[in-house]
Length: 134
Picture 1 (cartoon, rainbow, N blue to C red):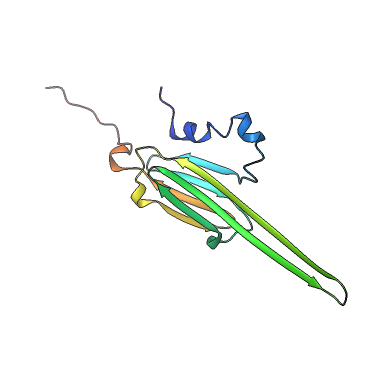
Picture 2: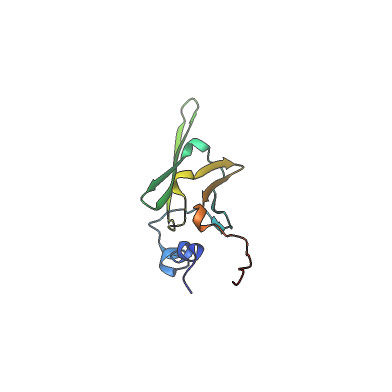
């Protein structure tokens, strides 16, 4: 049996060296679904805005990234405090040949980035039918 799209996506994620790596920073949780007509990638990224994301496609690799910088400043007579925070992540997904990469759509609502990747027509499930014997 061949590995499915979701098997390939999560093969690195369940690798212990992936989980122990501090170089990757904070990674948002990701859900990947394969339906009969499309693939769906959901990225849990609360606190971000639509403008904070970038989605790029290079060949068959879909890259989802985000970076956000926040600054706050507190001033009083002889006291001044500045705080900076910077968060970023980058996730890459190798799409299967069955993906229709020309029709990918994304939306962001309630802290979830939702990426829909339709399947090519020839890859969609067709209803079963009976073949007549001549």
